[in-house]
Image 1 (cartoon, rainbow, N blue to C red):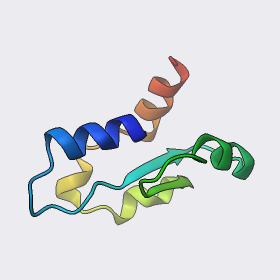
Image 2 (spheres, rainbow, N blue to C red):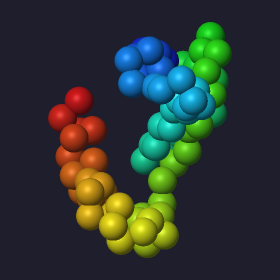
Image 3 (cartoon, one colour):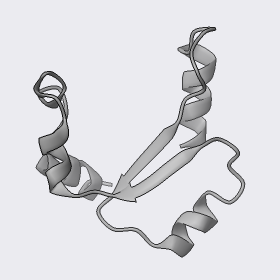
Length: 79
């Protein structure tokens, strides 16, 4: 995640943009694993497990461009 945030900030961020914030959505999460994985990262990164209901709160014009839960799970299971 730190690699991608650094790349976005260096290559895509405009001068008046705020620093990028990473967001990791997990089917489940372990506090210990998250703490260890992110212990030396200095950028803000949020980690949360997702709930299927989150899709209902996304505006329709954005929802159509997002992958479905099934597509995300399939991609994650392909490793």
